[in-house]
Length: 439
Image (cartoon, rainbow, N blue to C red):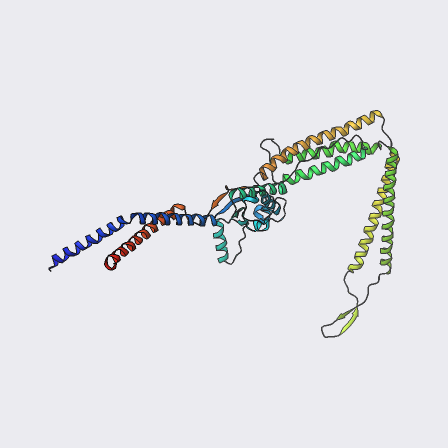
C-alpha cells in the first residue's frame, strides 16, 4: 500500500469514528439530556444551599461629632466600639424577631454580631510606613461595619436601635428652664436665685462660645448672649441688690433678724475655733527651739552643730499663725457687717414694695428672654454639631462567600453533558459486548 492509499485509509477511519460518535450521542440523547438536567439541578441546588449557609448581612455606621477622632464620646468619656451595640438593643431585637433569628439563645445571638472598625487604605499605608520607620501611628476609626449571619431586617433593626440608643445617651440636651415667678421670695433670696441662674447662663455661653459658633438663621452668637448676661447681672441685678442692702428691705423682718442672728452665731463659732488654733500655733512658736543635728563627714567621723539655713518648719508655723489671724479679722468684719445689716432691717411701704417687685419682674423677664435666645442658639448648635453624630453610612446589604447561581448552573450543564456522553458510551460498550459475546 503506497502512501496515498494509506492516507485515504486513515481519513476514512476518522470519518467512520466521528460518525459513530455522532450516532452514539444521537441514539442516547435522552440519557444525555436526563443526566445533564439532573446534574445541573443538583449542582444549582447545592450552590444555592452553600450560598445561603455563607450569607451575611452588613451595614456601616459612621460617627461624626467633636472629639470622635480622639476616641472620645460626645460627653468626653472614652469611646468603645462595644457601645455601638448595647445589650439592651440586642435583647429588644431578639424578643421582637425570635422567629426570624437563627439562634434560640440571645447570648448566642449577641455573639453572632461582629463590629469592625474600617481603616481607609491611605491610613493603612501610613501605619505600615510608620511601622517600617519604627514609629507608632495611632488611628481611631470613625466608621464601623456591623456584620451578622441574620437577615437584613434583623440587622436593620439592630442598627436603628443602636443609633437611637447612642443619640439618647450622648446627644446634648442644652435646653434651659425659665425662671419662675419670685413673688413669694424675700428680696435677698430673689437676688441669690437670679444671680446663680445668670452665673449658670454665663457658664453655658462661655463653654459653647469656645467653638466660635455663629447662627446663620438667628444672626447672633454665644458671645452676643454672654454680653447681655453680663450687662443684666452687673447693672440691673446689682442695682436692685444695692438698693435692698442699703435700705435693709425685707418682706418679713422677724425672719430676717433670726437669719442674721443665726449667721452671726455661726461666724462666732468659726472665730472661736480659729482663735483656739491660733493659740496652739502661738505656743508652738514660743516653745520651738532649733535642734542640734549630727553631720556625717566624708572621712567617716561626725560633729554636732546647727544648719546655717532658714528653718522651713519655723517659717511655716509663722505663716500659719499669720493666716489664722487674718481669717479671724475677716470673720470679725463679717460679724460687724451682719450686725449692721440686722440693725437696718425694715419692711418697705406699699410704694417701695411695688417698686421692688417691679425691679425683680424686669430682671426675671429679661433673663427669660435671654434664656429663649440661648435655647434657640443651643438647638441650632446641637443640630449642626451633633445632628449627624451617628448614622447609617450604607444600606443594609447581604453578601455571600459563594458564587452567582448562573455559574453553578453553567458548571452543572457542562458536567451533565460530559457525564451523559460518558454514560452513552458505557451503554454502547454494553450493547457491543452483548452482540459479540451474548447468547
